[in-house]
Length: 264
Image (cartoon, rainbow, N blue to C red):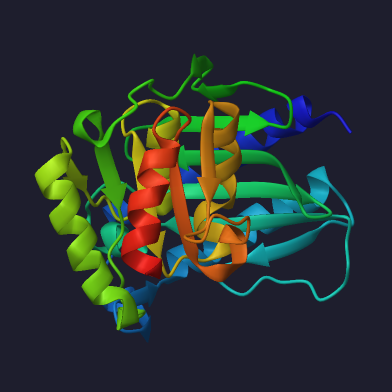
């Protein structure tokens, strides 16, 4: 399989979906929102964008399966599966607040082999594939070389349903507020990971994630020189809902801090 060509085709599809999302944002009404759970929303925009993406990917890679936020799924054991978030940052979208993004990843068996994240409001397309470098709008991106908390700007996400870790969040935020360049909460995990890959953040952590939130951003970050794990140092981050991500130089220190706070 020519992953490079496929990646460029997926970029085109992500941008088409992003254009649809941007156009719908101009006429969007809060009454179009469906509440899935506390602070967990969906709209016709998410659903139609997912349909557009799934139809396009099915043509690009016939016979592939899907794991997608708005219900497109596959119960069979396909070699290739797409992991899709048609609109990562839906709450931002419905309030007209950036960022929000289209996130598309491909796994071969259990390995991430391709990722595209298109951040709609800034017209920024991040992408990478197995064996490649990481790119933003055609230009190579890399993580920073900052190696300590005192030199780090850190991204996180706040829980909207998994409140059993709330005290840990408060403790972690207190620590990073005191010891780092600061904390940012953008509201789109896919974008957060790409910003680490592009050197805008040094690190990211969050609990309560879904596979479609982080799959594409993970391979982009790895190809840019970053590292990821779950809170216990393992590789279950796609499916157990927790992630620690950083540049290579800072990862060990960052992981130790998050692990101690959330797992002790």
